[in-house]
View 1 (cartoon, rainbow, N blue to C red):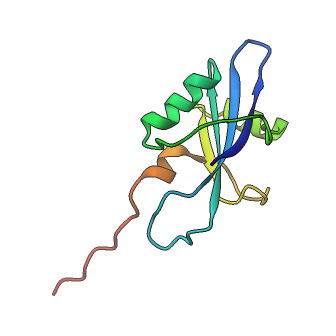
View 2 (view 1 turned 180 degrees about the vertical axis):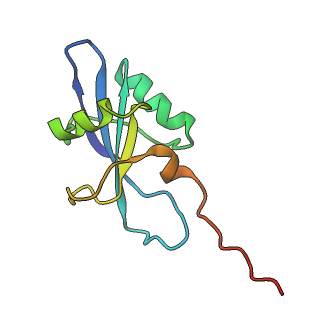
Length: 113
């Protein structure tokens, strides 16, 4: 289950923050988590945006970990309104666009001879 929460902005839109297990990719430990931020018109649309990207089992129950003011600023300044970072507790890590999380891992080309 996802830990997270939301905050309503003065214009009526919301920012939803979720801490989820990291999608399975090669070379990543199974226990790692990511913090995902979504800006949308309402909570349902924010979760729909994530489900449309392939994160099907995403639900928000309660408001245990709402986004911090810094997280709200980060997602509002991103053109897609959808960002993530791997270590939620590490404030030195930068936010990444969602495409970087969901794309398949890069493969190294085989050396031919």
